Image 1 (cartoon, rainbow, N blue to C red):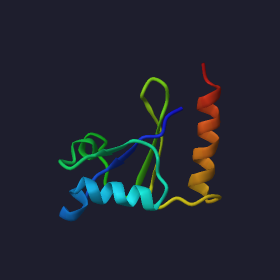
Image 2: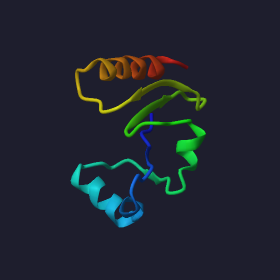
Image 3: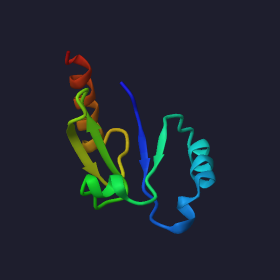
Image 4: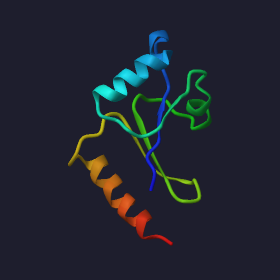
Length: 91
């Protein structure tokens, strides 16, 4: 399993890689973070919301999506946890 973050900046100052690195360190994020400054990934996924969460399977297919903030124990988080366990069990 791999976690990859994609940061699509809303404001110009968010396009600065140093600011993204600083934010990741502040929140203890250790996964790779792709900086989508030209909104190419955002556009490819037809995304409309900050934040958005996507869960892909081993073949790269999007299996689950949630928009907006997610917190431990809320409905979206529970759905994601269940799907992660399901995907991990797949061959």
